[in-house]
Length: 408
Image (cartoon, rainbow, N blue to C red; front, side):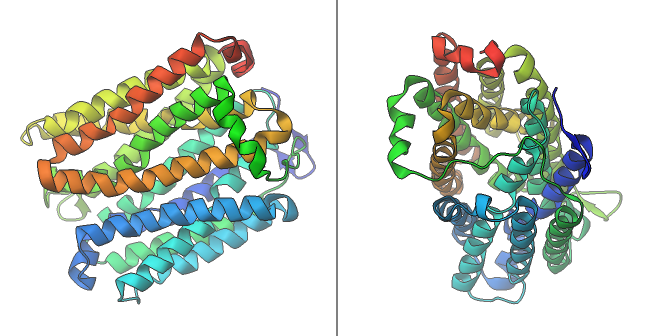
């Protein structure tokens, strides 16, 4: 793995700082999902309202991605400054959930939070990419692990502060602010950092007309169909299974602790998949991950609720598999696209993926209310089935030799 060394520090140190900061900063992404029951009780919100608060973040991220790309913010601002400003803004916006009473204003705050997160996650990936040339898949796998842990951290805060949901919200905001300050103080641009191509909407059609890019997009959309809906509602599902059970006496809510463990397993899966993709190829790694996650989605909701141990184990396996392939789709689309179009194509793919998540985040609770969790989760299996077909098809094509140094 070729890494950079410079006067501002080693690649390993920067990767550690940026990864930790990403964990902290992304703790605000699912903060309202983790405290859903409290918001229903304290602010009179319904399950439908909670769905729309999650969708607000997703759509804010989509809009923010397009705005950032069209203004070329990533190249106009130093990455660590952009990360810090975005994390601090997101922290402040997240904290407003506590005093705000109107669903409409909370929705606006969550939408703005999603826009702020555009300056966090993609910017962190850009910083790390500037320090790694060879073996970038493993480095970005570690970053996806950080994304996963950060997204799941509100469940850990909720499990610790069962009776004080406000502390969980303020805690996630404090972590986000700390993450921004860490990158500002200890982050550094790498020797392989390059300016991305300017956003050019006319080149977006290439992702549909070029066979390799089209199949990669299809695989990515299948992955995103499942991922964020699972992340958004796994806590509610586990709460329905485990009820109000606690660990360590009354000090730790079991369902919230297990929900965080699901995200933790996803972090481990991301790291393993990153190393596996560099060795065995991206199409094989993504296909195996989606086959496993799709099987979990298909069956977990139909397991008898008395099988609490089995449900917990399947949830952990699902958590590891559902995110394991994420970094590989982003890496693959950059390997298959022309250098001058990579920024535009990656932005377009990300925007389509997050727009799709808004639909499945809304769909899962609607189906669960009508037909139960079994059918709701099984619907998500459609995505990985489609994605696996696309990636295995890509593996048979000559374009796949451009992936992972010829490993397909």
